[in-house]
Image 1: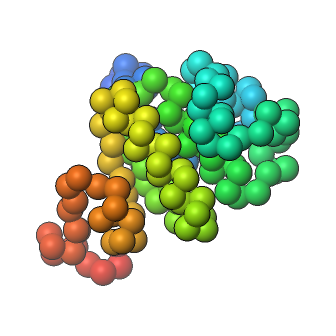
Image 2 (image 1 turned 90 degrees about the vertical axis):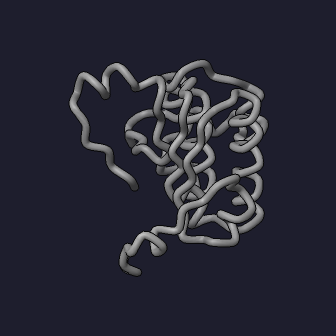
Length: 145
């Protein structure tokens, strides 16, 4: 996960502008509470991500990794943020689930004229989802990044 270290005033003032996908979900919170804390609970977003309503009253440990990742991405999109940083949001998912998640993210970003930064090691995925790209290796960055 990408970590931004900035002054607390900046962070407090930009919380609704910038949202990280993949932020930790507290294990003691039921998922409905987690989604409601991010902003408006949108039924259309739950449907788009295939989030079943029964999952809302479960704890994060009761879902699979793919189901939980859908919650994390939905939470970020429902926050009302103007920019979304997607740092390897679909790396651990099968290709069908990856495609479903990215389809929703890209459609929502286009609908809201939202800024989107995708961080990935998957060149094929980057070619499919990005309008512009930057390969860190071209800047002299080491292969270990």
